[in-house]
Length: 261
Image (cartoon, rainbow, N blue to C red; front, side, top):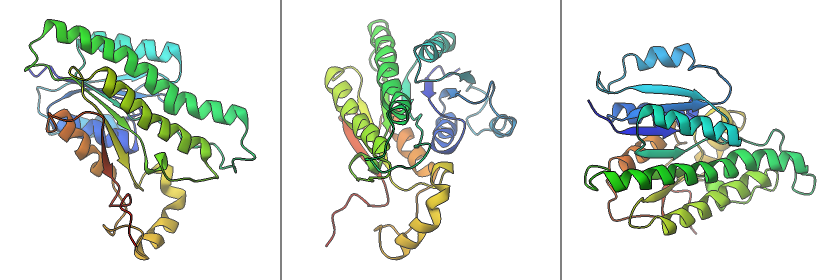
């Protein structure tokens, strides 16, 4: 039986769910995580029962809030239940409750978003990295190749003054990637995947606006992204297709990052 385990935070919908499914299909055992549901929604369980990963892969679900110390402890305990950890995907994130200009942004709203989008991933990575380093001491390096993958956003460098806290949190994820990549170099590669405009619940309210912009030439690749586009990039990292890279930013944005005249 395959024993590789991936943890994907925020994996009950959208990009996180697509990543978790893709990793299952790729032969990884997967720990799903969410904050709203005590168990995986029935429609997800139903779809996973016939997943292409085969009978050799397993999955678990842990309801835990990555933004709290208690929630992160629950996740760490689940890793012990799973028996090991090979891939951490820091995907959990929230949008502002209400879009406010930065001159009107409330302290509580800022702190709420930063705890979920930046503080949680930082300290979860810290704890998971310690477990990975301990595993490396007991396993052959060719059979154990741990990875940390952080999901950021084009908002890491694209200023939106009506959701400044979100932009700051994603810029923080970019620096967090560099910090962990530097600290763990030679042991655990760390990557940042930077999605563009992806069709999810988070972007549903503005999809019509962005579809019009795409028609006008916003993106070199003339379509909006799908969650699977991001999931494919995560699977490539998980399967060690970038053996000589760390701290790398992988843009999954239809070419938005290109500077064009």
